[in-house]
Image 1 (cartoon, rainbow, N blue to C red):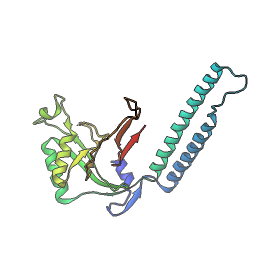
Image 2 (image 1 turned 180 degrees about the vertical axis):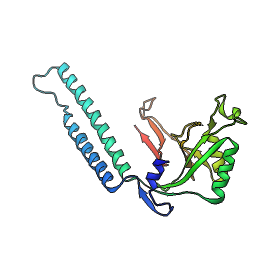
Image 3 (image 1 turned 45 degrees about the horizontal axis):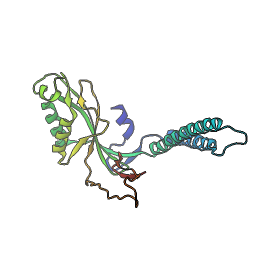
Image 4 (image 1 turned 135 degrees about the horizontal axis):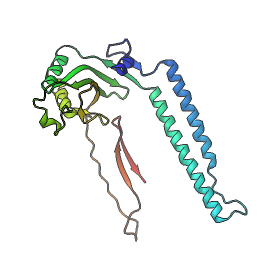
Length: 233
């Protein structure tokens, strides 16, 4: 749990908030992000759409293709800068459950041959609860074959999520990047609280007069912070 210990430092109270990085390291990341923003801006200067005097069409198309390449590279630098800025400002509040909740969670996981080492409740800057469980499968295979689909020594993280849901009396799901199985080596597994709302999406469309097909494209996406996005192309 070195990652979690670094995250919360010496502060174990849920009401207190701390950042992932120290002030010095956060400042360094912000400087890197600023440099990436500058690189992205410089690449926009390669956007030259006008045809030069005496330039053949083949030369013009080759130059346009190269320009588009630099533009895409600039967009990648810009995206990286945005992510670095977001990481630099990332803050969490954490607490370590004790008493009945932790004891129940430990005993119920033990029935599935899973040993719980530690558990943290995380309240992130998006006001969303996450749960980090450090655990591993231990000796014994009673009841394991049905849950492991023939893989010895493995247990589904959905089983742990169901147990966590029962103990906390709220719907808990494995995070998007959480492994499907719990292995025999101790590691951290991240679970998230199910959103308090559900979104139904739908569209109504029509073509222009005299046309049979509409050229518009759309999509609905859900971000990792629970936000919904609607894209129209």
